[in-house]
Length: 440
Image (spheres, rainbow, N blue to C red):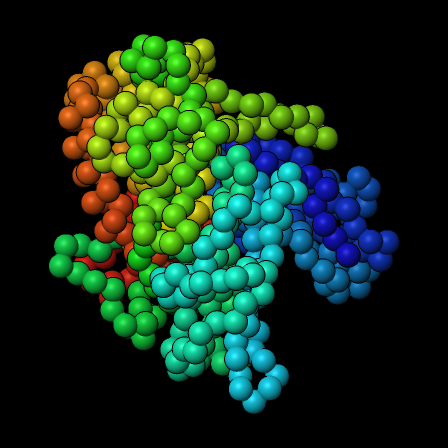
């Protein structure tokens, strides 16, 4: 009945024209932004002007189609400033019709270039399963009275990754939930998440209680963006021969990337993001800005400076104008993994970010997504302009110390699974959440 013709990609803010495609029986379309009606279209060209604000934030854009009598005919939803990866996957859990009640899972995927995954890791409640055919496999016997979390992570060529999650069991009965929101919660030292029944009173969206379906801890993702001055320093240290990816054993081979360990022994990941934007023009002649990342490597806490130098083959040429926008886009990548996460800005000296997105905008956006921001400086501890205080990583030893501290901070996060899709900035903790805070 109704779909969005305008697909909003990259960073979206300011006023944008959004066009819809509707069936002949549709006579009017109401468009809502974050639950509030912003306009009604009643005919061609089925276009609404949407004001997304002066800075990028996550948004939910909904179009509701009505007939001539005002009856609702259908809806379309588009998430704005929330990442859509180049590879996606879905999980379906189904129960055998036979009396045995064996649970079977079906995994499907779609990747930008149409390639299949080169590795798949499936976990049930955090334990890695041996799966012969990831497209369809039986689950081991588990307590039907308890809620269980089934996850699949896929690694594709060129470093693209995808993840799918499903929750089943407990009071869900025969149902399976796959529309979930992953919320990272930081536990204070000595504290741990309570039982699932107690977690039900921890979360609210505005004044509405949210249902918790499960919780887990596991490996984490870190995204790191270097400002141009930092890239210049590291390019000098690599002799301009960077551009590869560091492997766990210290070898440098650009055609091999460690994405995750299929055996589940260690897959804390590091993504090094670009500060140089790629500009894409949509059908509506609107400009979209996107930033690429290197394929992920293992996050390490030893010899990190030398490993980072391997990513840099030449200094960046942007002059720092797009640094805040790069932090926004790469921070969204960290949130998309549904893992514990953090974003690191590696800077050197001072600079002026002259882009449309400011450092304050980037900080606010990362806070919306519950992605903690850490600032490191290659030239000693200092205020990094509008980015705030920067930790001193001016030597290899200091950078390894900072990496160990970061690892401990991110490892304190736990992922709590909330039923349904939600805007992350609307989720809050109640007073019942003792010894815990939202990651930011």
